[in-house]
Image (tube, rainbow, N blue to C red; front, side, top):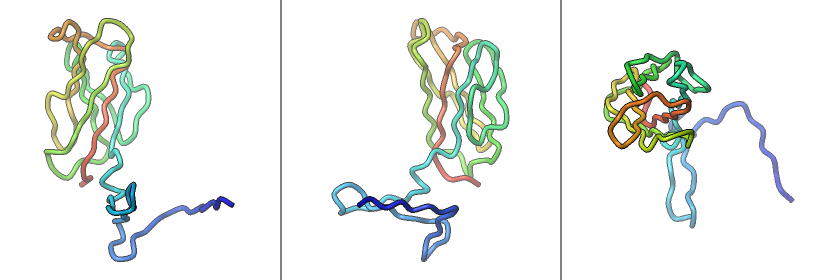
Length: 131
């Protein structure tokens, strides 16, 4: 019979903010907090507007196809991982991250591999440690 565990908070035994999860095959562990996106944003660059988000306070329009999601809670240092993607809603062929700071990243949508153009749905996910 399956069990259901309902809790409001999980706390590590040895370190309050660290919980390890046993990986597939049972021979390795993964730190749960390290594997979670710390911020993500779905953006309509044409409007511009946030469609949905986590830990994103606002966006800044920086020209054709370039948008900065601004974090509510900053990352602790530069060098974290950002991923950009585009929904197939036209001729868009590429999404990229141009720059990162502790308080934002800069995402760009491209058509024809090198021309910036506003997308109606670009997604950005950010992984790393919060400040």
